[in-house]
Length: 388
Image 1 (cartoon, rainbow, N blue to C red):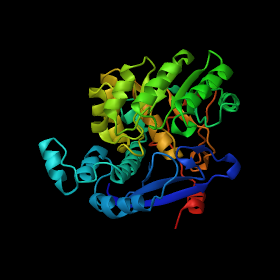
Image 2: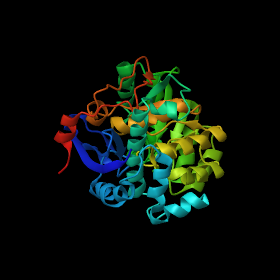
Image 3: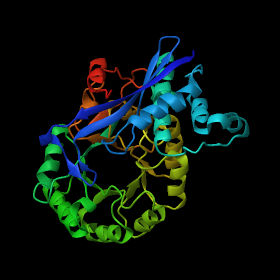
Image 4: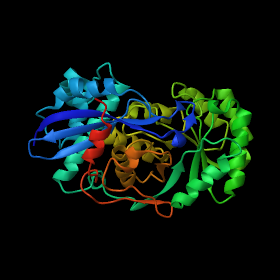
């Protein structure tokens, strides 16, 4: 089997004004992603998803160009059923033969950023093809299921102190969730305001509900420590990205100051970034985004770190249905996976991009056994929302 073409499309789906959220990223007026399509000479087609930003905004043109003009030529004519080999070809470029023969990477300059996002999307697509070629779900190729289903947490929580409780309770009513996540940090103006919002959330939710918070890396170390001290009585399940991903030592300092579990990883690239988090003892929970960190191939390596060092695995799954499905495949096969992110923002990419509905019932996501990623792309949706 040979790869005959690799294409990418920037999808942009507007969000109605009344359903838009406002955070430190600004007003979320649209959902954006890059859909990757890999075609073969045997008629199998695989899909992947890549993102130019961690959030849902961002111009994807440079990412589309990177995929089609820089990465695709490296793989045309290659067998898509060997994703680990193809990953090395993309990461090390013209020096890939040395990487494969010497047993270590010889990366090109694009070791992070949109090059890795492009690798991520292509990697997902070739895993999709591999699974289809064997009539097997990807999780079976990763070692088999550790989980038939996983609890999900409702991810949202932008309302102010007066509205946050009702907003989170609304999430609970939608899918029977037993865990919810809210945003804190610089969007609140100061630490005290974030603390008041967390207090209001806990009072509304009561004692039986898990509550996570996400600062999007916007506190400095002093602010993050103060926040941890002042919310210590509110039983947080985790504190996500307390400081910038550029300040891993600072994250380790925050973790050492509190017994609130620290989660991070959505802004990290490759196993090498996650290795640094391990060595610094900076986190309790890994959150790789498979549309950014290097795809399923690299996600499997990152999960191995979590398993080895007895850390939790809870991938960042904020995006479209393709990257969500990829994250679910990894979670199914990893014993360290314990919960799944489920976005409660209005997001047609999550619900309309593929034919198979992604649903939560009684707070659980069922892991299906369809071949490959297990998704069927809605071609009409793609045509409607592709940016020309």
